[in-house]
Length: 187
Ligand code: GAR
Image 1: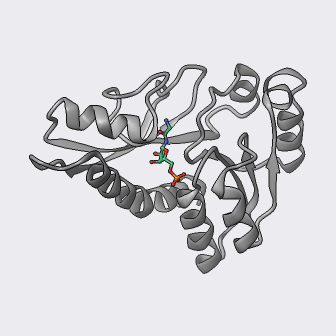
Image 2: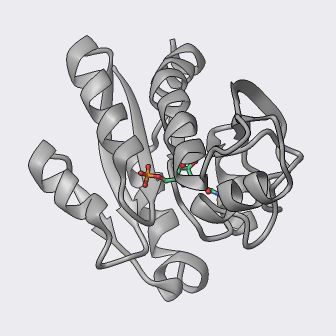
């Protein structure tokens, strides 16, 4: 049985979607969900789904590397960032080469980098009058949103679409593509 862990900072709708996908097909275990935000709704989703979770602060993540130690003990086949907003320190990238992936809610290299996340991305896409947006699933390196791209998928942005409408199209792409891409990388 392959093992994965997930990192999230907010709502966690992708986490829930991935957990449900692999519960159904039984090929992959979700060993743990990690969050840096003690108020994140993803914690509620973990409780509902019966998935172990860990809340950590900057110290455990980037200084004493307690989170890295925990990951080493689990030794997951893949570490999946699903709406995780902190930069991943080099120690993690070096410890798990080509085993950390992220999803970004835009067509990188457009609309990536520090400060470009969640709703901010969709607002910028609408403000610039883009006619398309989408998702990028990529490997994680020490820079925000710059690792090698694994896959991208596009949606149309229509004249008059609000950022919420773009967000909802992008989320749908995430739900469709993210679990399947994880599965492909593992099996
Ligand atoms: C997702 O759209 C994900 O692509 C984005 O945050 C959202 C989290 O939603 N990630 C980033 O912006 C990372 N730079 P969720 O908490 O409902 O899964």
